[in-house]
Length: 413
Image 1 (cartoon, rainbow, N blue to C red):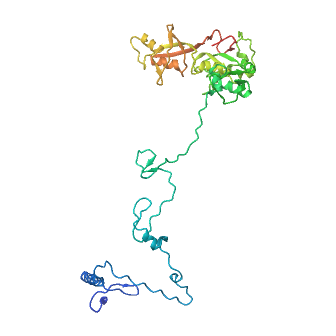
Image 2 (cartoon, helix red, strand yellow; image 1 turned 60 degrees about the horizontal axis):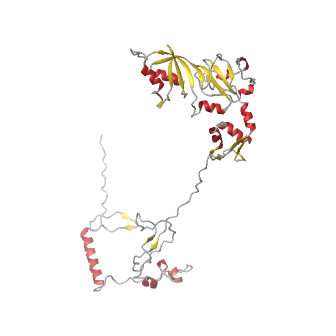
Image 3 (cartoon, rainbow, N blue to C red; image 1 turned 30 degrees about the vertical axis):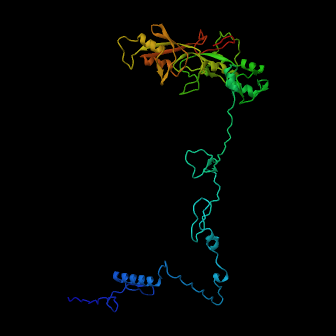
C-alpha cells in the first residue's frame, strides 16, 4: 500500500527588512527592537553631553521648565480650578512665613528645617506619665530646670479590717453555748451585748459584756444527752453500707429501767440528737448522743482533753506477719504509749498498760479513725475485741448492751 506524505510549508520568520527579528506585538502597534548594550551606552553619553552644554558655568541645575499653559475649556465644561482661585500653599504656611522661620528652633530645642518644609507640629496630647528624658532611678522633682510630676495612680478604697471576733464564736469560747445555739439565741433576741440587743454576724471585743436571757437557759435545760451501750453491727453516725445508725436504738422499749435521772421520754427528744464521737462498727461500749452543743464541743472539739478508756483484746502476730523470738516486748509497749504516727502525724501520748494476759487498757485524749487498731498493727498486734468503758468521768457501769439512759443534771464529763 502506498503512503501519502504531506509536505508542510515552514512558517515565515518574523523579521524586518534589515533581517532583524521582530519583537512581539504589544498594544496597538509594534514595539521598537531591543537595543544592544553599545547602543544604550552611546545614547547615554550623547544625553550627558547635551545636558552639560545646556548648563552654564557654575550652575547646579538647568533652567526651570516652563509652565504648561492651561487648557481651554470646551463648550459646556467647567473651567479648571486654577483659573477660579489661587492654590493654597502646602501645609497652610506662606512662603514669607517659611522664610522668616529659617534659622529659628523648634519647641523641643532642635533647629527648624530649612527650605519649604513646615516646622514639625508639637504633640498636644496630655501626658500624665514621666518625661521621656527622665533618667532611670532619678526621683520626681526638678529636671533641667523644669518641674516633673509623678503619674497619677488610681486610688482603691480599702476597707478597714473588722474589729473583734464573731459573737457566736466568743460565746462558744466562754462556754455559754455552741455556735449553732448562739446563732439561734441571737436570732430569738435572747442575747445582749453591753446592754444592747445583739444581731447575727455581730463582732465583739474581748472585754464586751454578754448577757443571756433566762429563756435561753430554760431551753438549754430541756436538751437531753443520752448514754448508749452500742452493740456490734451499728454505726455511730449516718447509715452506711446497709448498717443502721445507733440512734435507732433510742426508744421507749430500750430505756434502761434503773435510770435515776427522772426524765420522761418523748419522741421530740430525738430531734437534733447527734453522736459526740465515733465508735467503729465492730466495736462496742459507751456512745454519747446529745442535743447540747456545749457537750459535743467538750468531747470532740479541737481543744478537747477528755479521756476515753478502752479495753482491747489482742493477739501477737508479728510485724508484717513475721513473729520475733522475744515476742511482744517492753519496747513495743513503749511505742504504743508514745512514738507512733498515723498518716504522717505524730500521735499524742497515751496511757497503755496490761489489764490481763491478753487484754490491754488504752487511755487516749484523741480519737482518730480506727486509731487503736492501726496502732496495734504497727507493733505486731491484732485486735480481737474492743470496748469503750469510760468517757471522762462517766463510766459505762452496769448499762446493758443495746440499752440507754439519760445523763443526769449532776453528772459532768
